[in-house]
Image (cartoon, rainbow, N blue to C red; front, top):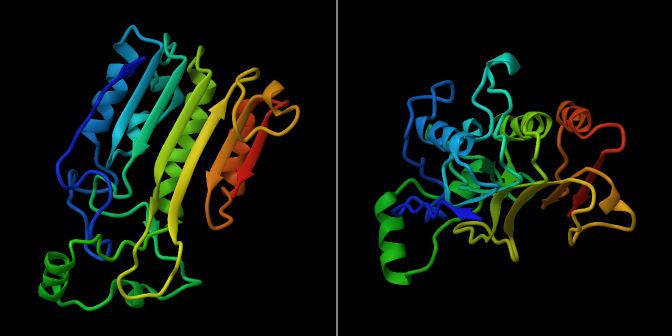
Length: 242
């Protein structure tokens, strides 16, 4: 197994204050994410079968599928790859978030708290605790490109048996809203038949499947579920684990 062992500075992992905009590494959502693209190219050229990409960095969907059209993709895509695990941070490369606060708990302004950043800085300095982490609900326009890219990879990577797209399971600490036991949990798995998995029910291991280990009763859109099923084939299965 190849572990890229990617590391970052204070922007990796969980942000301390999710009311603040994260840093921008590219100019906009339509710009090319060169870091994610470079990793995609590395996987294409590497003569390895298993790769783990950790560190919860702000990758974009370009790490899976940077092509505008299927005809632009290399044939075969990732010819040696059988297993891939990618851990994605909660923030996007263009300075946004893949998640938002749960509207059933509070409004955006309530989650955000005061605008006095000096107060926030002093609080963290005194308490030493993670401050105002509240983003638990996937934002469709930001998360969906990853889910569509997943379907394209399943269809075009010939040897792929397992793919894990992990946005982490993080215990959240809203700073201004009372919410006990709030977590951010969002992992999507692809498994081929015969690959046993802890969330499988009886008979599932005999089918190609996408498994969603997610919180808040989240479901993918009908468009994405259709793309997944087209990639999985007529015996495919989509399973939600809440």
